[in-house]
Image (cartoon, rainbow, N blue to C red; front, side):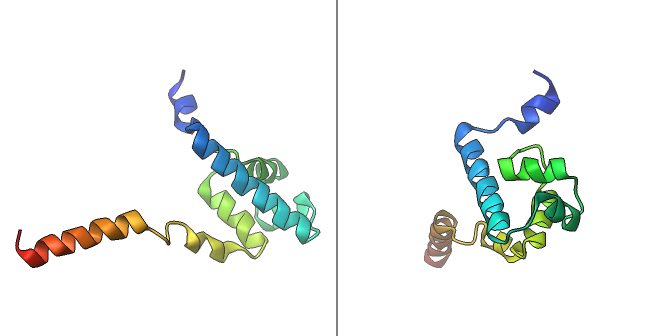
Length: 103
């Protein structure tokens, strides 16, 4: 296996999540009744890249995903990533408690 191949392999769970994202992007495009070619043009990417995004292809850059979201007027949705972080907040609270107690 080459280094390039290893860099795009994802655990199955993450592959499924990326496929769901692609399906959601495709559904948003179809709800807007926009052809793939037009979204690709607005996102400044090729039709093939837009198609890969709709399939959840991990080899496509995050920037390309964002440009497609922008073309669909959904770019603000990216701010929802990692917004709800209960584990991080719990860890932060534990650290603050340790500091407050002087340990």
